[in-house]
Image (cartoon, rainbow, N blue to C red):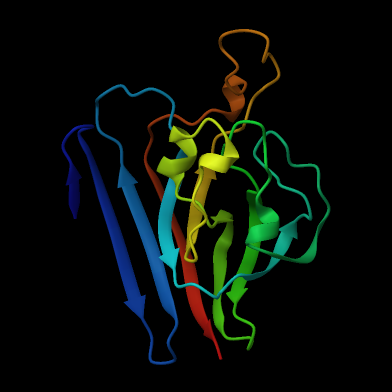
Length: 192
């Protein structure tokens, strides 16, 4: 059990490893009594070895989807980590997929990993670190890394922008995340 003393919360991440190489990841977050501002995401971040940049998923696509921008048809889609990057005038997180049943990252030989939601997850992949994206004013300031930064999320707040002409361009209240208890599970399976 992990204590998060700054926010008075508890976090437990449990791994169940099976003999066939599959790993179940279970996350339990217990919110504390401290009032917090909006939470951008509830999930995990992994760093994947370079070369596993072929992407396939079953869920909404082919374009990015978010809690407040989920109008794509559900199907099986393919892409690459690099193709999911959208070069906005100011760098920001992009290329996200919500309500995904599974996704895979493989190398050119077809080996990699398959992540399955129980029942659904959100995910985002990038060759850019989040802290670099947040600190950059322009894309040319970013360094593209060979490794892959992967988020596997229970939820992510909406992207907002419906009132971007105001100082407060947050998502509508029904697409914001608050500090609350949550539990979710996903399975990582090897693709050989």
